[in-house]
Image (cartoon, rainbow over all chains, first blue to last red):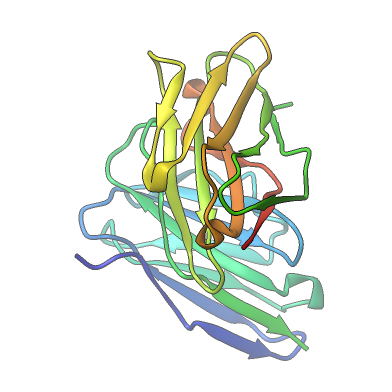
Length: 115
Length: 114
């Protein structure tokens, strides 16, 4: 079956512009997660969704970052007024049901470069 | 604070030799522990997890990991390494009372030489 998909795969933007990153989770997965992977760094948790609600937004680096999920499916991560330090690979993951024992299925990521 | 440590940035082994990738954690409560692998130009893939029960967990591609509560460790092992095992390995922990937030280690790059 289809895995987690993300678009675009690569995004180059100029400092100060807004960007939207999209994630399509595996059909039927109720939990969705966003992470950031900077060069040479591990995964940094950003936000997760349970259905359409986001109980934990503590990982968002600043108020320039926001995310939404609609219909319990597609999620969009928006970065406003991008800065060079936002350059990273943004990973999305989903898991089947609500429950902390479930492994996550990751998408291929969106590589964001802010010039 | 909850944390996961992977003390080695890189591990080098010869093909056919056993490999170990180390992971220690610091969390309150009983953790759920995971290993993920990231092959070049590919997304992260789940390898194995420890939830409860037998401390030795077997996963994909011949990997296994041993949960050691007293040492708060969850080291990844494989009896005989393959060149194709070369990748970036991440240890992760989730606390049952912590919702669905997963804390990842910084990753360990494994190089297997032929």
